[in-house]
Length: 114
Ligand SMILES: [Zn+2]
Image 1 (spheres, rainbow, N blue to C red):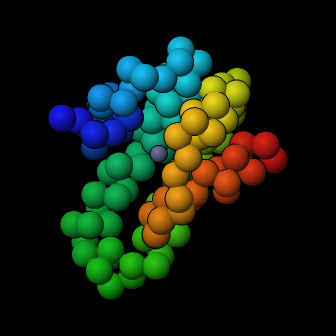
Image 2 (image 1 turned 45 degrees about the horizontal axis):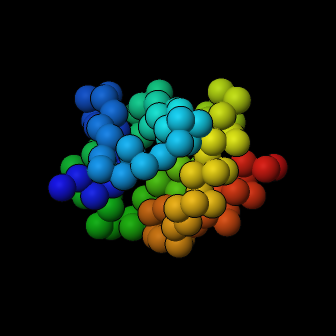
Image 3 (image 1 turned 120 degrees about the vertical axis):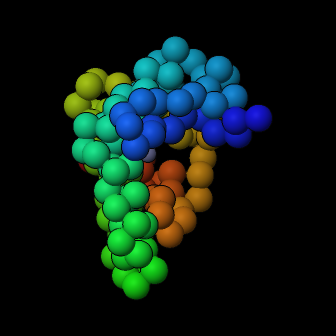
């Protein structure tokens, strides 16, 4: 079971999970744009590098802050593509709390609206 919506791989592809099919067409377009934003910025490769160089262990807070920035940058790419309404809908229907590596729904919505 693929218990996620979508994710990008270090080799530049997007994998959709089981929850992807429950999204509306505009939400799917926004989520795909978000993952494309990650690929365009080489985010997964950067995260892999931070893991391989062990930076995630000796500079944990720095890595967390960069990961949160990557998420907001991927959302900014969604907005640039004119798909912010789809991302807002997705975030409102599937709210997520803030974590060390990920901004919460409230912060993401504020950034999309800003
Ligand atoms: Zn993301």
